[in-house]
Image (tube, rainbow, N blue to C red):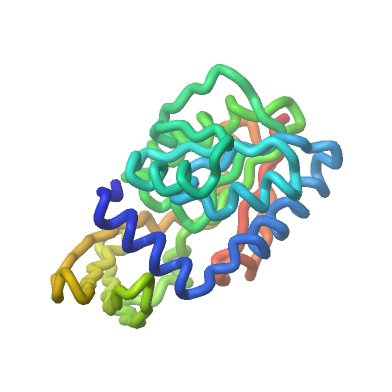
Length: 237
């Protein structure tokens, strides 16, 4: 789970790197409307700092977000006054109502710890959509598309602070483990070093589709979109 420091770095990184939340939300909204033309409400699970919520509100209508990290939600609340935001675990949250669509993007589903937890999450998503409603999930890489020992790096400037990021990702059993190192430099704070480790499950396409089916969702896989990882779209039976 992201702490306060990590949440600020996350927000600064993706803002400065120009992550196109609006284009991603438009693609997902199109997939939702194809299956439920009258969709007018959406819940974004693992919404992070809320980058997709503004566009979802414009494209679909009523939008809410939920995330396990309170520091992430604090940033979202500052940027999105009036948008309902909830603290909750994707495996077990219960908002007591349903939506026309539930989304889980940016490969956040990979943070579940096991296949059983994937099933728990999909059942939870399905409980929160109306009959005929749509669940859209962006997966992490499949075992055959994952590239072992991947190295990535970038440097960004955000409000006078320079952040250099270097990451190395390796196979860790049925998951990937990404070690991330940040050097953060500011005029008042000098230079400091922050590290993070992210473990994401490498589920197969069949495992995702089976989890959708067990949750009562009829799945389709849309390949190539959203950073190349594709999108699973399921309709509640």
